[in-house]
Length: 291
Image (cartoon, rainbow, N blue to C red; front, side):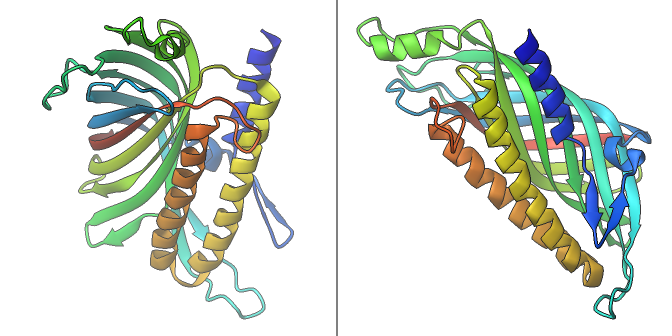
């Protein structure tokens, strides 16, 4: 229980964004938590499931996902500093949410592969989504990335043949038990009105066999340090070129998280070792409603 409480407290700290630049300490709770406009996002996606070292194959699955939370869009006024910056204004979008979703082979319309293993999995968690909007007339384009910490429960409908005890014992570690996981997501939202948006998204979700607090926390700290370095670099671009900064942020953040999650595919606590993670790669179409 103590480890669980420590994990939850540590995870909440990782979702807090505190920026310190040029000696200015900026702590804006509206920016941190986004308690401004209620948002509902729903998405449907096509997934591939992979587990390193697992010799059996999984059936294709589809994902239905729902996010509920609050968003804010904060105007940042950059300061002229030693005449190096133009003092532009740019906006930062933040969406903090609770999410619930389900993968299932039953709702996937793609052809089934003979001998593959069907599955379903429920998940729920807490996440944040961020980006810098680009205005194009009456339309707002948001290149974004998001991160979610979640719990998942796998339900296997069939199991590997008993002759393959390695695969069987591995999948039993996940089956019908709650496991901790994390997700990163990159995509583009197109806001046609203040209320309606449509998005294309790629999501990578890693589910862990077990969780060792100190190794897992160390891996998360390293991940956040790298993300913070990208944030600092991008803010220097945003000072002069807000549109370019939005695009650079999208490319660097999502490339960084993809690489980090790829390393965790083999070692869940990378760089501190660990077992391979069960992962889902999903391409999604989503719709958002902001009130």
